[in-house]
Length: 265
Length: 84
Image (tube, rainbow over all chains, first blue to last red; front, side, top):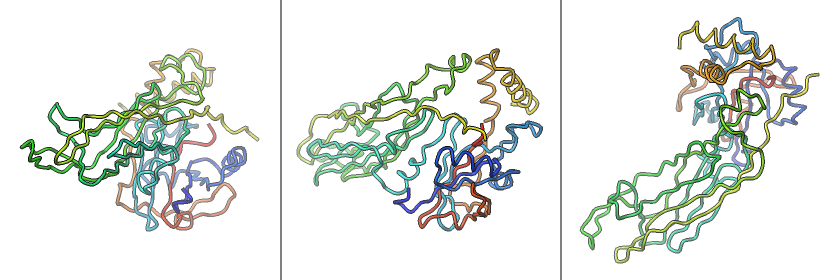
């Protein structure tokens, strides 16, 4: 993030002493702000109002999420996920807004089409959402297809397969209708390269060995994994149409072990 | 979800956790997650300004939104707690 000129900071309702202890235990370098009394959490409108006021532990906490804020104070992006077990990795919005190819990318060279597929990070915890990016570069005079498309053509399509993945999405730019004279058909195409962004949700796995949590899903063991992917497309020119291709690739992903609370002083 | 039901769920689970958590049922845990997140809000919309603020950081230094922000912006993460 530093390379992109973005700073990071966190806000919780914890006292400065708790934050100082946590920060020292985990060697945190970014500012951890103490919003004891939750004034700023309220000002943002994200105080968790489901928690009753007499709840000693949880009252005052926010619905967890993050904002990417421009230097003029405007919200550029935000990520709030469906439950507190699911959080975004910080690199997700960086990949989306600062055009980085991400820390974890693979190059695809399929003749007339070259592509970069990137995850915003190569390590995360279970339950996290990662950024996904696809950059396609096409030789001049070629096009690939978009959707909707008749059944006998292959639209460009990126799929990731792994038992770690709960959700995935990729928002492709809108294709352009092109009249293909030889076929007498107008089809949606990409006539040049493009960039697309999306995300990948990693399944949540109980961080502690409680029987009632284990029943929610099989535990994902920390360690090194590989995410298998396929990029499908069909490249054509005005004269030639190549057969559909399915290029396989692999991206590494390390699942980190859960982090225990900082030891109390 | 009704407010009284949320309160009951949130207090109930914490009571059971304090007692060791051995008798917590999976369905109760799912209700607990749901009760916390029901109707969650996400604050200022994209394109809107965030409220200005000044808060102390972990070293006790007073930090304003302006001085926290880098040349291209600030990633501001709201989290539940660094304590539990």
